Image 1 (cartoon, rainbow, N blue to C red):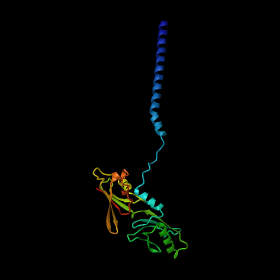
Image 2: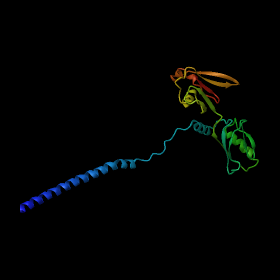
Image 3: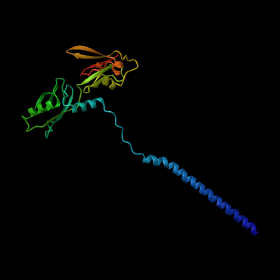
Image 4: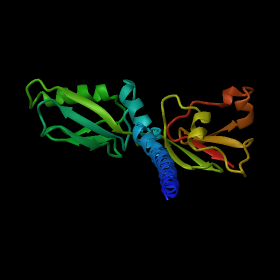
Length: 230
């Protein structure tokens, strides 16, 4: 009887030992599972936040910045100017250049702006305002360029009007248009320009210019030029 009890106790001890080992294995597996699940979350939490990607400046914005930085920029019709008179908010304002080339401001009424640089216009306004203000300090900034444009028509990705950047060439303008369509005849590209009321045509062979053979055709564009891609 005693031997039977001993064997029974031994069996229960073995069963308990096996159960403990199984429990340890299960706990280890559970811990491992938790670690594996937690790793991606931890990695995600530690990933530095990324700000929005900087997009490329629109051609219009680039042209406006170039004009603001270029002291020789000539104001034209449809440009928008920021006229600032120090300590005179009633006179300071943003004004468009009318088709007749003039702007309107309080005290001085209509003033010719087209054909002048921003600094020349500022000097003219300063002289005019001295009749009404004590030591006026005037600043003129071009905030929108609408007078200096070129046009690209025909078989390009983005035909239309484009702001004319300083010293822009035909190749640079075509790059702004996003390249050619599948039907473009790049051997017959030409530029149309009005000179003294007459239209002049300039040839442009894209492949030859690109390979450096006819670089003289890569002319500097002028306001109003039209690039035709047949």
